[in-house]
Image 1 (cartoon, rainbow, N blue to C red):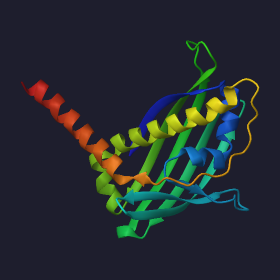
Image 2 (image 1 turned 45 degrees about the vertical axis):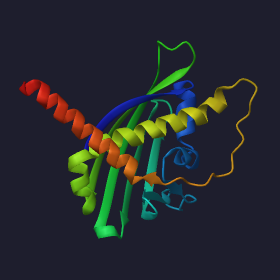
Image 3 (image 1 turned 60 degrees about the vertical axis):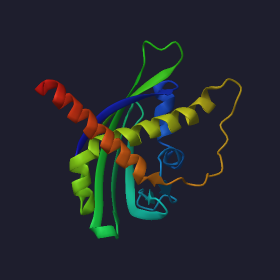
Length: 195
């Protein structure tokens, strides 16, 4: 599944790229993500918790990251799996940061390109609504990252590492609703064209 998108966060691109390099901080902005201390090989073991009502499914895996602070680019490669019907995911995300010239305060535009391989029960889900799901996850991450970075942009404040908040799992029902909405939009568009 291929996905491209962009979002904006407070701060200049040279500061934002360094914030992105703080993997535990960024994991707190990703709904459902848990990250463990960095392994000796440089990777980050962790999990993604997806809730289906009261039932929670844990995808366990590992992420590697790379950052080019001068070019304002970075990448993330991850693999994970869950015992639920052999659900597997592999994802490669590349991003480029640039200052927003139209903004009146320092703002960074983050352009993302992502390719994901989904297996097991996730393969069908990706075919029917993968892009809609990616948009929901990206919007939630962008909102959380903007709130997090806004703290750094307030004059006279110092960034103090916050205690890790309780992780809120990624809601499968929220994702399902995004898929339904996307399918309804496609149907309405098709009906307009057909009439």
